[in-house]
Image (cartoon, rainbow, N blue to C red; front, side):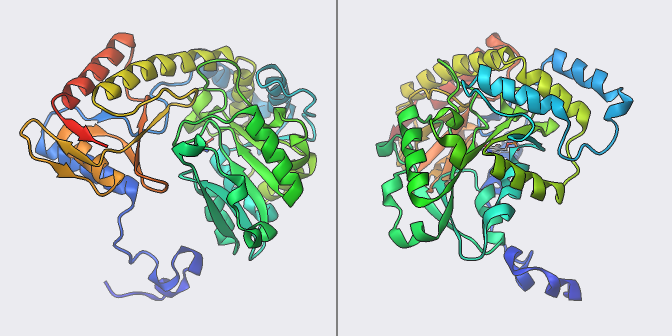
Length: 415
Ligand SMILES: Cc1ncc(COP(=O)(O)O)c(C=O)c1O
């Protein structure tokens, strides 16, 4: 096909004149293709999908009912813009009751989001000028960095390693980068490592932010999915509200990824700036959805039930993987189990297969074992197993995990 003039009109940030011409295949597309090929080679077989980053269940029935009721309210029909009081007030109550963060002013210190992804794509517009740096953890959820680069900013990656308990080494940032840095983006419990932060680490972050005049964006998408104790909010750290906003979402905590609703809370001026850009970006989430989300934030026992399910699945998966030789340890939250990828596998027939990367392991697991995971090679080769695989009840969960055990049996992995 010959190019039309359209080909010359793309912005450099998405590839300029080369837009759409690259034949590079990205990680998630490779996984999709490998799954398709594995199914074609094994018709009727069951792929066990441990790669999915979203809940396997629907929202709870009472939340769906709430949505139905609210959807019928004529007053909820129009543009929501930056939202009415319901979600803001529920968010402030939630932060106090569930996260131990008292005193959030719902009028000035909370605004809803159409999901945290949307908030992470909006926030850079408020802070990033060309040449500014953002400090982000790697591996990680890249959206804030991608948009920062769109605005001419640069990303300095802080590797998350086992040696540092998957917390960034803040002292590793070179002075010239720190001078130009404006924002530090954190996410705990973390995707993909499943690691949790500690209150002590958050105290260090507040000090670091003050010392280097940084804004902290804490992406708390998995904050409430904890297996023991209470969720840890960055905003519960003394002084945090002076330097940060925190992003909460109903997606993972309430099985509502498709509903697109969360909130941004914290420093009043930062929330205001988010609201100003948001006002020029979207017209707000449907009020009925916001009100159903408000219902959720007033019913944290829903999340506790979801977390208990993941905890149970995690216990079994850790056992299965340990039996297969992986150094799997149960995280304290999220639904991700992050394990070091093997260097080689020796199946029953004795042939030794060497892997150069986690991506190669993941491809092999799909092709040979019909088990899908997500590989990460950003800070050492690791595989992410999600306990969001589809299973309707504990009996079905057991069946799926027994199946994983059987498929792994007889293969020796070298690490
Ligand atoms: C770390 C992290 N942040 C944000 C999101 C997006 O959340 P939401 O559905 O609220 O946009 C995800 C989704 O996978 C995530 O893993």
